[in-house]
Length: 494
Image (cartoon, rainbow, N blue to C red):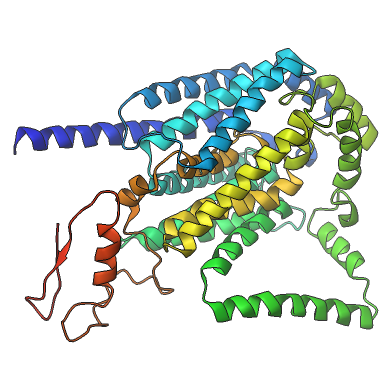
């Protein structure tokens, strides 16, 4: 083995070591920050308003240390040699940078500057971790890391509930919480299921079926959390990805058939005199979600009306990054609404309160551009690997209507989604193709073997020439040739 070969192997080993260190840091940091061992023992899985006030005022020293440690790790790894170069690849990257620069500037007019500075410091440290992911992990690495970390959170939650004797899935009022709120745990389950599904879709090994089993496992516990927003986001994300990649007849059937079926069901229900809303409300209460009527979205509609009225006091620039939710306002809004309100329970309203209409416009533009980029890669170039960020964005679109987690990348689910968007925004498309060029859309039966049955008289699969042409025009400029020496086989010489 030559010295050059040894150098290449050493560099690859170093890069993989950095990647595994980063994945370990992500798992440990968010495990410390977001998990409480006895959370399943809390009544109704809620803290009292005075406890939330104390947390906002004092914070957690352990959480601060975990975030600071992860941020420092991210900064170090960004400076270390990595597989990918960080670059502004088009308007999406520029718009992301502009949004966070505007967020940093919001300190100048923040209602509570000290609080805003602390929250922005957390975001800066998280952004360092995101840039480290962009530098060292491929999209497939991120998918597998999300599946592994998410499944570990679920398993730890099961163990915690068994230890506290709260694991009773046979009880109709049971909600799986584990070590976090059921809504938070539902996001872990949904992201684990989505990541495991795409790990299965892009895997070329014989153990790929194991990823499918993990996806089913996570989906079962997503149902057990009874988190409606996460369940809707999960179904909508996968359904939207299927919709844009399926063939035209199925798309037309879904486009016209589903609305007609829903309209027919509503018409039939009104004809037979069924109070549909009342029935749905009763069903929601019957599965242990009877905290409020479904017509008020569990008390969210009155809350949103209250907060939108407050946002009109600073409509254009907002109160400053995360500066609205002071301990005093949490107590006041909670007293007005009659339940503990630590956030707006809606990403658009939280962004509106923090950064005003200007910030909400930039945030929305980032989401729209990221969705467009991923959809274009899926439909035009048939890259199934981009289905992962597309599905997460669609999930966040639905979940973000009812929850505030995606407003900032400080939780595991929002951090993962932000990483996938950052890979699209700050990495050249050709660099991802070098790693994932074998992850093209496969057939529905997930056949891993090359298409050797569709031969012409030359003895070469029909799609080899197209694959060769696509590879030739990619940035790595690898020269691939196909041989016709053997009618029973075909080869590629690089």
